[in-house]
Length: 122
Image (cartoon, rainbow, N blue to C red; front, side):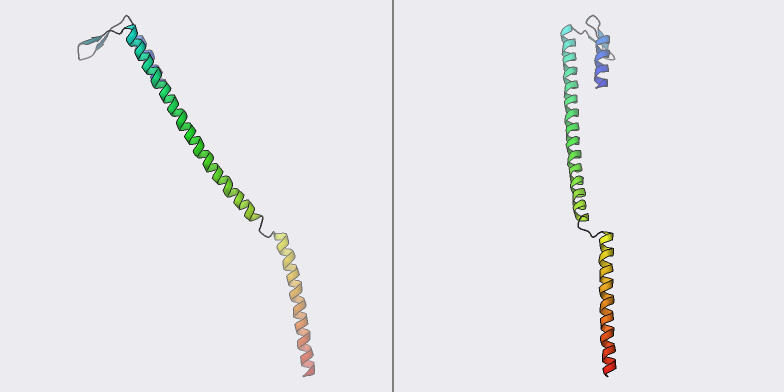
């Protein structure tokens, strides 16, 4: 966009309504009229607007793509968070393992007592 504005300013400065431009190597002389200058300004203005619109469209597409990607990432995070909520915590596991150890100890004691009773009877 800066290039187009710079080109416009250079064109207007070099080819003002009263000055003629000689096209090097051709021998042609171009004498701009106010109408041709207005046409060039209009064409440059149109080009600047078109490029600004294209830039805006590209920016909108990129923004939408980024939002879609972030939505997918957030959905994945939510899934992991939900899954983590179903896991057993360390405290719960220690409590359960303590209970299981106690039950196993009691069971072993009972089995050993039964074995001792059979040994005595035999």
